[in-house]
Length: 295
Image (tube, rainbow, N blue to C red; front, top):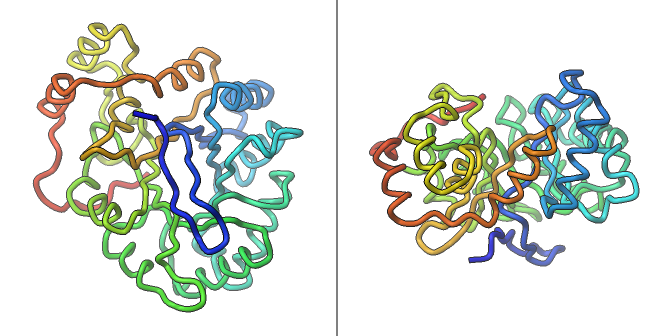
């Protein structure tokens, strides 16, 4: 099966196929690694087909967006660029100003996708109005949400007007083998609405259910049998087709060249039913609704 996820068509944009693994940028632009290494990693990812790059005004107080902008110099059209707005910047006017500031840091005049980073106190209808204006002005092509649990996503989806919540492209939430809460209620509802999931922390780097999965003996054993790394196993599991469809984009962050290479190779890993059953037994899916895991 082709390792891509389809974003549905909108009134202004055709449907688009995106790689099921993209590139995250959380903690970039904060001096934790040399900037030239971060820039090179993103460019390497583009070369390997990891064309979706996710960032946010929150990351490094805009520093990550500046790293992305540097990486995309002369290559903007090769990337599907995603950024996110703080909830307190998501008013009808402030949302436009925040987007324009992100565009300046990114060195571009448009975003492929703009997300509300998490629900806040500003009415969702006001945020949607800002997104509508940004889309009408050509500054964003699609919009979506992030860290929305089921009831919040349903409230957003029900918004009506000249632009409606039903045009939502994605919901970006925490998702990894050790944190599967979205599988009970949220993800099935999103599937009914044809809203793909974008999963952050796919290598279990965070969340209230955080576990050191990289050193888990069962995962190490499975990965060794498949001749892959544990991170590759986790990525292949996260983007696995379920019920015959693939509707999740994982966005791991990588700076080291070998990690970028391994992430790209994970697009081609198909896990057998036997392996999936072993992983389900070790890390079972929830049998009830749980609170959304957030970092």
